[in-house]
Amino acid sequence: MDTGEYGARQNPARRRGRRLLRALLAALITTAVVLPLSAAARPQIPAPAPAQLPPVTRATLPRAYAANRANALEAARMAAAYGATARARAERALAERRLLAFDGRGAGRAIEVLGDLARADRIAVLVPGSDTSLGTYARFRATATALAARLGREAPPGTATAVVAWLGYDTPGTVSTTVLTPDRADQAAPALRDFIRQLHVIAGPSAHVTLLCHSYGSVVCSRAADRLAVDDIALVGSPGTGADDVAALHTTARVWAARGGDDWVAEVPHVRADLFGTTVGFGTDPVDPAFGARVFAAGDGGHSDYFRPGSVSLANLARIVLGEQAEVSGA
Figure 1 (cartoon, rainbow, N blue to C red):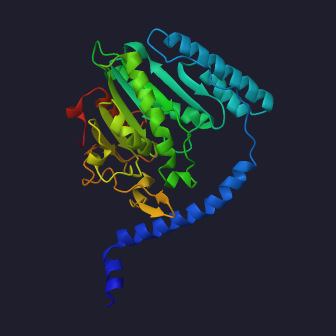
Figure 2: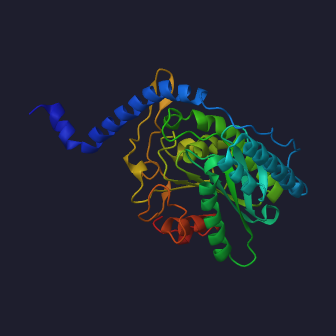
Figure 3: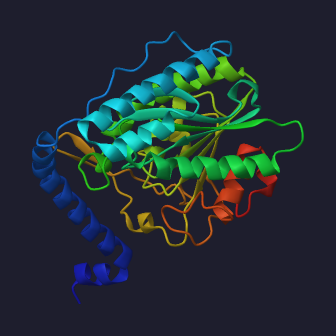
């Protein structure tokens, strides 16, 4: 028997991985041509420039919330006048919330606080994955509200919690060249580092901060990890981080990882290759023991179910935020 054929039969996972990699590379080439043309034909919804504010402190937090609410309301007015009713509706909803930052230009960015950030002892920062924008923000916010509700029920007496929905970067499209490379994550990492520094100015240096990073957001967190003053980093539904193992992240934080039983990301080949000067893929699977993360149970949910109310994964994520490491199941 041909040894190459025998090897392929003996390694169906490797063969499947190679097929998937070829499909991803084909998608990379196709979208490299198609997407720029379609994007160029799509006009931008008008929006004001972000509010110009000095660095936010605990004392100036209410002023920052007010300025960003006003900016979101103006963005909604401009979007409505342009005829972008869905976008206007999303921005009007944001104008009623606590926004540390808001930018209605392009796909949009927003950083929303749920809870009393100035007095919080335990803070969770959610970093989203692909296809998250002002247009899909309600879906992202639902994950933050589910976590905030769980923390509110389970926090010990005297422990104040806050959740931050950090849409602080231009996320890649799920079907795009950018979702296959670390480029967007590299662009986002400095902004995430700056935000975590600002967070400690507001909440104080002793506040316990946990990063909860979903899907492509796990790539963002990993690219920023070496200079982040956070206590825990949890990677859920991750396609990989671009690092071979936890040690390569150069972080003092505890690193956790989980994947639901029905998450399609399990089928993504965990490879990394340099093609024509571009890195494609993200390498080692974070739930692989070789990566070295603390793997915890996430139940049988799919790629969008990690923050589903009542789920095993949400319970474990809340325990991580609250510092209850011994109670995290599957770890």
